[in-house]
Structure formats: C-alpha cells, structure tokens
Length: 175
Image (cartoon, rainbow, N blue to C red; front, side, top):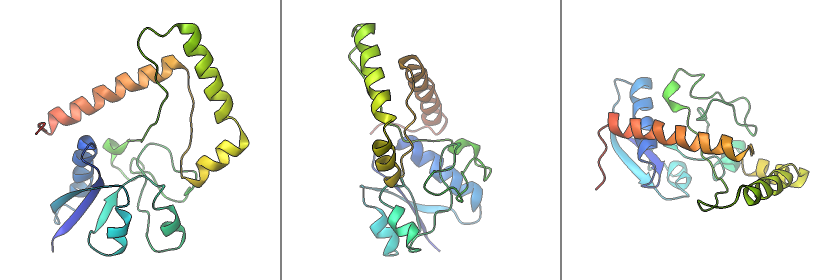
C-alpha cells in the first residue's frame, strides 16, 4: 500500500528528512512512497483521506482533534503540548531526533543598541505575561516562552547547527 506523508511547505527541508526518518523507524516495512509538501491547511487533505498522515503545527488541527475527527499521535519537541497534555512527544516515543519546535521571535538589525534591545525585550516579556495574551496563545496551541536576547541568540545558533547537520547528513541539495 502506498503511504503518503505530508509536511507543510517547501521550506521545511529538515523536517522532511526527520519526518521521513521517523516514519521509517516506526514502520520499517511500510516505506513512504510519496512525500508531499503541503501549504497551510493540509489538514483538509488528511480529513479527506488524500494523505495518510501529516506533520504540521497544531493551530489548524486543534478543533479537529478535539472533535475526534483527527487523532494526534505525538507532538514534536521535548515538552508535551499544553493543549493536549495526554499526547506524548515524539522524543518520549523513542524518536529523539524529533525534538523540533516551531518558533517565532522578535529580531532587530545588527548594530541595534543594547539599550533598545533590552527595552524591546522587556516590553515583549511584559506582553507575554498578560493573562489575555496567554489565553489567546493557548487557543492556538502555542506556548510562548520568552527569553533573554542572549538565550534566543544561543537557540538560533544551536538550531542552525542542528539543521545544517540534518541537511548535510541527508545529502539534501538546494534545487
């Protein structure tokens, strides 16, 4: 039987490799025969039976999971999703390579004064601490973290190194 794995968008090259690797580990006798990059909204094709499973962020799938139309098998990252604490992480399920999170961050141009960066960061952390902001993010399946500029810079450097290794090890080439 042909298995179709979908991931969101063409920009997720590392996630493609990890998702295919995770599938191969979980179902070694049933290789993926078609890897489909999907635009946002790929859950529609999952609901319609055009694809077998999808690796995507939780926002567009939450309502379908809660309604019992889709089943969450696992979440990427090392922490369980606040919206679905009963769903294990892929790391817990034995797929250590799937410690992957989707991030959004606030960046400033190189050369921005440390004082301005500190003020922006303080304002961002203040907003993220507001109850209504936390509640809104929770409805989207998002867990805002907030950090210092130095912690975020370290995260970006480490993440870049991780994905560079994934791309190199998988021999992925830009086309």
